[in-house]
Image (cartoon, rainbow, N blue to C red; front, side, top):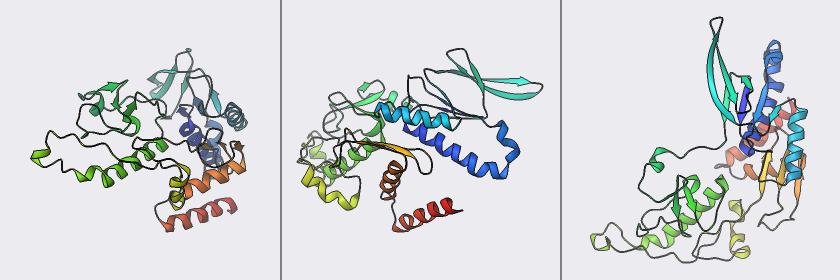
Length: 294
């Protein structure tokens, strides 16, 4: 049995891919084991894909049910117990509602605590995340310490701990360092007490494709502060399915939602453009075609 903890895009995508792998590949290799396999998705909240449009969340939940995946909402993990029955070790997941499920593999993609490097630091923290200003600088460090991604917390603009936020923050800081901060030699002893000047205008990284990055200057207004741009939300549903929420996107696209094959096409093409080599961009569609045909 497999248990996936969390109801976000990562958990849902992993569960869908795991279902496809078991039913398309494992079933061919070990058909006698299929009756023993059970998939369970556990979410402490009232629904999955909480940041998506509710219609898409309900659609995804329905599709998981159609795949015979046991989805347990409003269920939090209380602990893990190891027991021995007739000399055989059994691992049991205990939930706060009193129920239990035996499992062989648990994948945790719910909330995580910060690493000790952050929680034990002397930096200002907000719920175990480093406090930063609108320039991603840690206060009272003279512009010499920056934080981004999951470990950073902006008090003025609450941002989700997602990869697209971290990516845009990284692109913002890289431009700040290359164009502005590099002008001050912080290693020089005479600049020891000099605060790093604030950056000039930086264009937000709205477009998710590097080939279209020139549109950022056309569609966005540059500013010294970090600006997060909503690129929409996507979650695949295995091969040929998925959901896409563009209702709140800043992209120049219709403010709509998609599901099924249309959403899968958007999802796959978007992540295909993020490959770091032309070779992978050519090989991956070939592998997809091979999986589809054979």
